[in-house]
Image 1: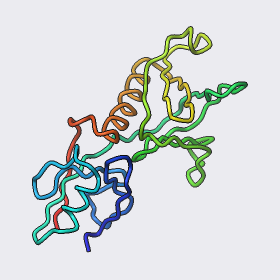
Image 2 (image 1 turned 90 degrees about the horizontal axis):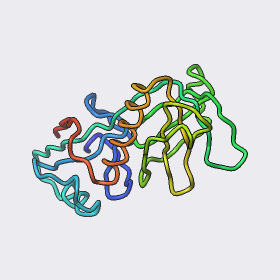
Image 3 (image 1 turned 45 degrees about the horizontal axis):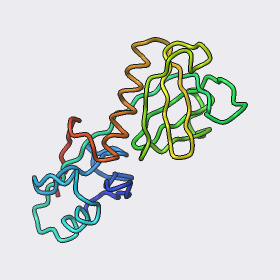
Length: 178
């Protein structure tokens, strides 16, 4: 056994569980025996792993992770701005009522097939430091506490969506050997 379970997200094999210390939820399969597979179709990646002969060397890309307070408004009519504790975890952007509410996510956005862009104050009820996460179901506008925080959040979400969509190659890799 490989000691990990993955999930298909788009064309990516994304770690969902692992007994390896150097793998985290959300890591994305990058190479099989030093052969780059990040941009390959999912079925081709799985075929390489399924037909392996020892030794098997898997390399993964680490998705960004971060957490903190953001003010959000859904892109649904009559929504209100609300402060929530956000966590970028693996392929999801989760939000909770507050930091202490660890066991219950009030909502989540799957970041596959999403896009992110910075928002002018005129598009965010006059608020500064906003960015928008667009999903196939709509999305939300998020306000950070500062320009620096806004840029860090927007970049991390962008890197995640780009990697999940198979369009980013510049993130840190981790190795797992069998």
